Amino acid sequence: MCGRYATSASPQDLMEEFEVDDLFDGLPGPDYNVAPTVAVPAIFERRVKDTGEIRRRLAPLVWGLVPSWAKDASIGSRMINARLETVAEKPAFKRPFSARRCILPADGFYEWYATEPTAGAATRGRGKPKKQPFFIHRADGGLLVMAGIYEIWRHPHADPSDDPAWLRTCSVITTQATDAAGHIHDRMPMVITRDAIDAWLDPTITDPRRALELLEVTDAAALEAYAVSTDVNSVDNNNPSLIQPLAAEPEQVQDQETLI
Image (cartoon, rainbow, N blue to C red):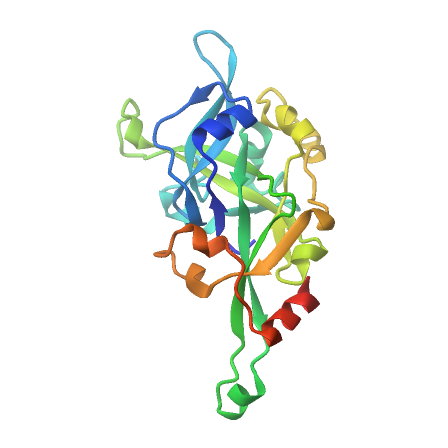
């Protein structure tokens, strides 16, 4: 996963679809160009201290996990993805994978594919490959339920009783891409199937081996990928047109067909 995705479902729709108990303030609106270090909608479960009841929450988390032991929050920009192969062992991810798992609903995610330079460009000395963005999403139009982990970090010099002193962050778990995405990029998000969501979010399940069993790679046939505008390259651009298929020239259409 390259580091951009889209999420536009309303809080009300997410609460209904994923049977959320509590809605927290600060959720971002529709974001068609989600970039690292911004807040994203996330669903997770926590035990209420006073009653011991486990409640499912929809709340904003900052994309880019900051380990609880980090000296400062800047490390988060390098922790947007957690590789499946090491998520249960890497120091930054081991603890949240065992006890702080979440789901990150998405319309789909972006990847960039380096196309071959045209013959004319090569002869003019402009032989650098052009990177074409693609949008990868569920072919049935459903949400891509990305598997995530989250952590809570406190600023070491802030008053712990002050809520802004606490930073809540997350990472997307990634794996080797299936064919539908693998021709474009070698990594893709892990997903949680609908029948595994309850167990994945359950904070009482702390065995990493059990958590790993709940992860699943999206079947290649369930995904669709198509070229989109290079407007997505800039985080300043953020609107529904970013996820619309690119009106391709005949030559570009042929290139896409060979990829997917």
